[in-house]
Image (cartoon, rainbow, N blue to C red; front, side, top):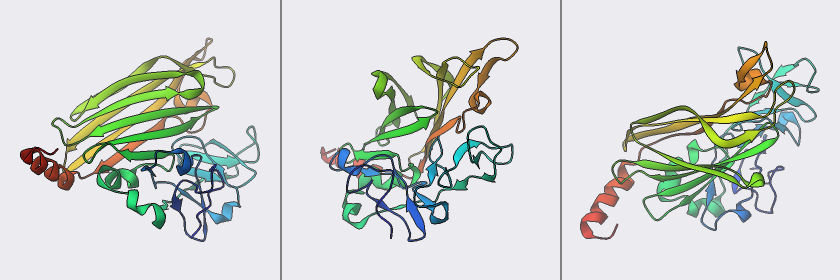
Length: 276
């Protein structure tokens, strides 16, 4: 197993591992996360054929390109492509990253809510249990030249199930809290006061988010997107997503699908005993 992610700062990497014919990915270190946290395992491994330092494409971490290439927007049949330079013609589709697994020395941290969602979370997301019946997820996404953070505090067992959310940009000292509950859909909405730089001819773009939370504790689905929109001079006008010339937009976030039946049954029993 390969356990030394080249992108990750710190001797322990992000606490996950890949097969011998894969390269571990990660831009966050488990040494800098809370002492009981684990990291998501989704998209955590790139094919070793891409070279010892493959290029991780922007977005949720789904794609990588060969070492020395750059990620560019794909065509209508594939979301991401690889090219020798940003202005060059794409020479291949990007490779789809594979899932990692939690290293044995950190497996004991995979308990309660975090054990149920780790497989749905990209490798750039940490998860820390908040007591036995809740969890705090903290994800970092690369959007053009900016890193955007998204925190989610999930409490599935107290009806209605809810998730408190916070979009943040550490470098700018910016954060915007909101929330969602089961059965609710938040259509695309602007995030007040948040913008990121864009390539010419677009000015700084405003950030937009959308979220939905559906199902029951037996099969709860949570997901959303982060996107950017900018107003360019006529005749271009308002432009969003991949049409801005930024690969990886819109970014799919969380994409959690899990059953919380067992842990919530335990919560109900504990509540009856007065111990929840």
